[in-house]
Length: 287
Image (cartoon, rainbow, N blue to C red; front, top):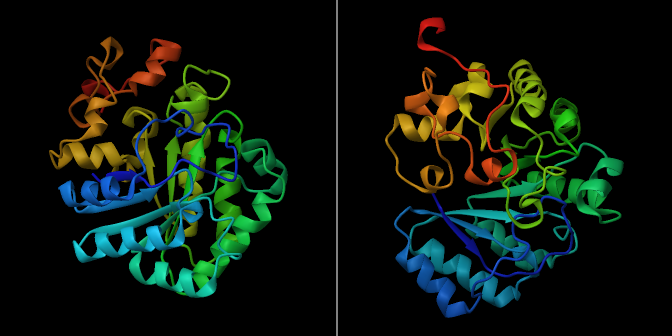
């Protein structure tokens, strides 16, 4: 688990799935520093909005404070400001951050425009990721799976392998039903629609030697790759956290061999669809 720490509420792109839209909270510097002090996870996710739009001096103070506290620092950004950021300040950020988590949910400019509603964002993000890799930073690509892009998940894997050589791994996260996606079936595909394409992407990762994780879809939909599933690993290790509070097992989960190693679908998914249907139930007798 990790402390998710939005340091600002401003972003320069407008992703259709944005979970931060409408978020309320404080971005006061003292509050943010105190949150780091209160953290017991040891892992801080610096997020936003986009943290690269935070006042640079305040951003560096937050990162330095987290580093002094011995935290693992994950820096979440859409990456499009990286090549325009002051090189000296970027070097300071890179020296404090353990890895960059880049929101990268399209394999070409046309799809990226649909996803982000921001002309030119794709090219800037590609350039930013390449810059980080060239400078020796660890980079995770975060592919948010939603209705516009789930069919292209495998294409994204092959694009990343060819064009972004040197990234460390890909996180496939089924979109949360929050912010712009809340209650919106036009953004949130059914699990059974997205799962075949996600599994094809995982197969491509395996063939290409790419490390990957998957989250926010029940384990039974990605059973062949369960060891890559964040909740499966956490539940095996008996780790408490929001992965349990955000999700719930339902009647369709009864009898599934994964019941003890999967918290079930997200509650916000159930708000939209109400059930898992059709459900690829894995009965103990079939396992």
